[in-house]
Length: 384
Image 1 (cartoon, helix red, strand yellow):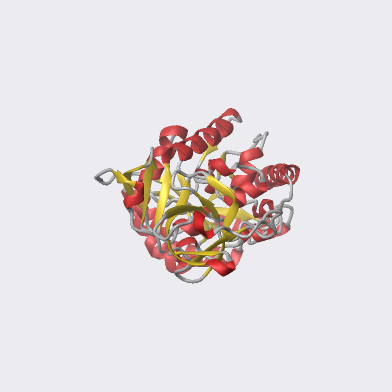
Image 2: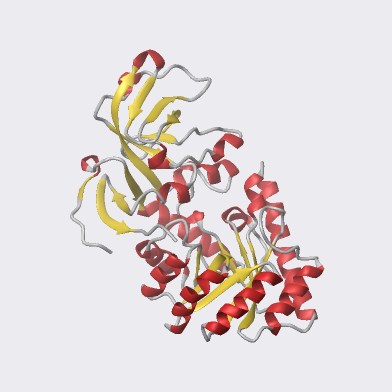
């Protein structure tokens, strides 16, 4: 944790990224209790927060079951912070084997993923050249969302055999991300994705074992499914990420409440367009990201929900438009025209984001807030 002099929230320059530690810890506790009660290990994804200070709170509340990362820079950052057990959960490429080897030679228990035999051959060549044994999990596609091998296909066994037979690779297991859950329109649909994710992942592992191969890890992911899953039989670990902070999209899915959202962007009113009912602020899409994911949900939250300085949402007011450095506060579509006098020039407001990962990625630190004060400044990293 970086030394920091407490300051009033209203004194911060804008835009700034705020983190409500109390809300975050509540989110962490609920997920840890859920996964533990189902007899499974939590391997949280760090791609949302990318901060050793946040991870300290995560592991204080959920134990150390290893971490998941989305870049090798994250892997190095968290390994240098003392985290040995790391899963790099994006398809591995040959050009990254040398960096992976540096971590492994330094003592990192790094695992990587792939979904095809052609890449297996290339990874085996790279691992041989670097004099390492590279643990590899097979990525599964359980819902047609993105990459991965069909759990019921012959390709699954072909890839498993290719890894197991390669001298410098080790078949570590199977993993998936139920990204299809993000298209759900009800909690029942999310629960259906959770059941499907678990069943197909366990089936894939059983097929690999029946073929005479080891498959020690059965790893599933996605915050929506982790938030509602009720049976993890046969699963060894769960990898939610955005649950740390939650966001408007997760609230729209029904797996979180608005009051669970732990990050926000502080912004200042810089002008008015009174005849349009617009309030102009100094936080545009560079401060919040271009993510408009809630536009596909029943409630379109624009670029974010406006809150008072103490974090209370104004249900009728959103950041309805955004340019690179300018945001436009306006009334929600269908509501009454915004009274811009509610937002004096120079006043400061908070914006809850659609997508916590994308918004946090715009910043190099969190301003940790509590009781109207900034109590700490926590670094985060970006890049690959």
